[in-house]
Figure 1 (cartoon, one colour):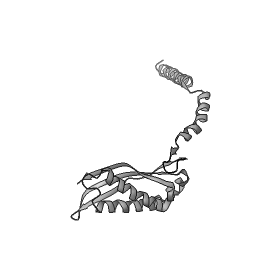
Figure 2 (cartoon, rainbow, N blue to C red):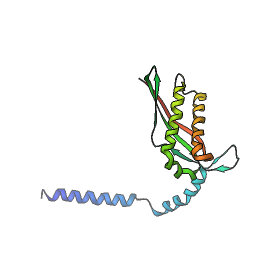
Figure 3 (cartoon, rainbow, N blue to C red):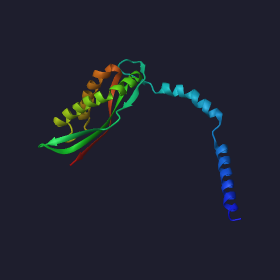
Figure 4 (cartoon, one colour):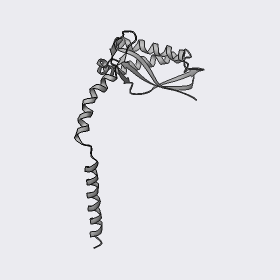
Length: 163
């Protein structure tokens, strides 16, 4: 009797779980409606370009790792800046972007090091003029490899940690 009670409770619990799972499962109709609305949702992702006046679609291509930039003062590391970057680009360059990402990371790091060496991360480094100049320099580098298909460089996060 002691052995049958746990087996009975296990069987009842298992049966109840399966029954609730079947009862709560989504029906087939919403899946069809969802599939039909996905193309419409993709169209909503298009953006108007102020320069051209026609609708262009963009993908947001995230750089896989953060950038770490040392701030050197008096031959010592005084701070570390970490940044996360993404590109707003034509979907046609997505495969090219991931194929050349190491080369692009190298060029972006050089721009970030130059920005740090000229004092770009000192003081009020998050000021819009300062970050605007950095975005512009990064965009020029991105366009060397990916052409005009890149419309913006987006700074997703920036953090400075003093040592």
